[in-house]
Image (tube, rainbow, N blue to C red; front, side, top):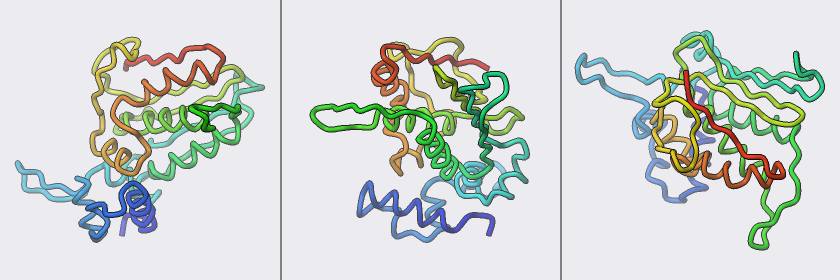
Length: 224
């Protein structure tokens, strides 16, 4: 009763788009959560229950706020007013719908210039930001008071998310060692096609951001 039931249908449709005979499609909602590793038993204590990841992925908004009162995703538009903001979006919902809300906002406020690859037009905006958005959601630390933020400036986009880092400093394609900070979140995002694979965000962004920006390279910095 603490989950948004319509999300189970959404996830099944996304799984079906990836594989029509996916092994999770025939499971009940409860069994689906178990299959995704979102219902577990603590072998030391014998306690059974739904994980924090299940709440972040499928929980009703009030349940998420009850368990994680500081949780939110803050989006600021600062194209004109760089000190305050021209427009603001606050998301306090599950990560699946938060992903959709972030992408819709970016589509509204960022350009999408014409680009062809191998004779086929692709959306550079979607190609880049589906990875960026998925990464700031999947790799964030949700148990503290800090929150994830995305800011659109006139000449750049910046993101930041709370983190328990494996290392500190700049990250590049050459130095990248993919390590999921929230494996259960990453697993579902990959299965429903919101992330290609571990480490794909930096690789894809490093390839397409210079094309999108006219030569400017993306920067990825890990730290507290």
